[in-house]
Length: 228
Image (cartoon, rainbow, N blue to C red; front, side, top):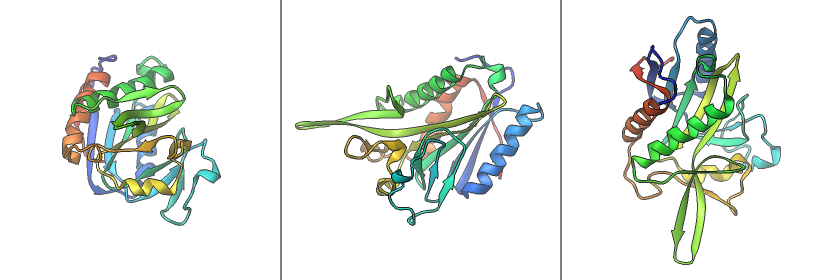
């Protein structure tokens, strides 16, 4: 376990779809409270309606269908990504002042968390140098490829993290065709989900696995109400 905390981390799950801009505003307000010592750490699980977000490294040419879904510029790391129903987004608001002030370790812990979540469904998640996120290898007669199943895009402000991860449970994978996800073209690598891999997993199933693995990596959690 990575530096267990004496105070459990808040664990909040929003039902239904949560609009992107109000969610980001609420997240940033919570981050400010954490910075000031006025609120505890929080992992906030939600789903967004279909949309694209552009990280600080996003290239205009990677937005292939600019009029398809709303596009939001965001201060997180990374390039273009898709959010939508069936994808579990987790905004991770942790105080790295209490966790070693090590950004590389923090990102590695996020990867370890997602890989451990996948392992609960007997899926082998892997990381690859130069390709942020978590990948699975898929094979068939005469072919093999690696598809992304989870994206990571974080930002730190005064050593408190925000934004987080996007875990594909059962999103409409065709929606990813409107962007070059994370700058990696479909001719090289694709996108997959637990259901696409043939696993009848619900969001509730995924949430339970995410929480178990999160606690193993980051410490104990306690139930908390969503921010909005």
